[in-house]
Length: 50
Image (cartoon, rainbow, N blue to C red; front, top):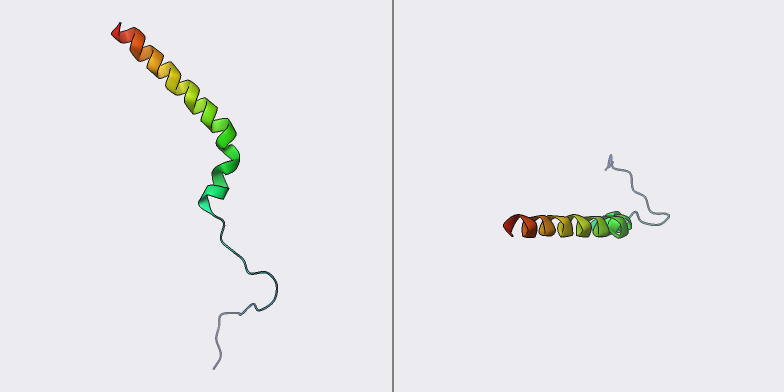
């Protein structure tokens, strides 16, 4: 019978993009920023408790 969904039998299959591959380009920027914020917060806590 007739199927309303079109079938694509030619070309490369479309693979979904991995979640890790979607954010890996921002890791070299975000990781040092998060480290700097964490060091600032730890220094602030150390000064506040001293």
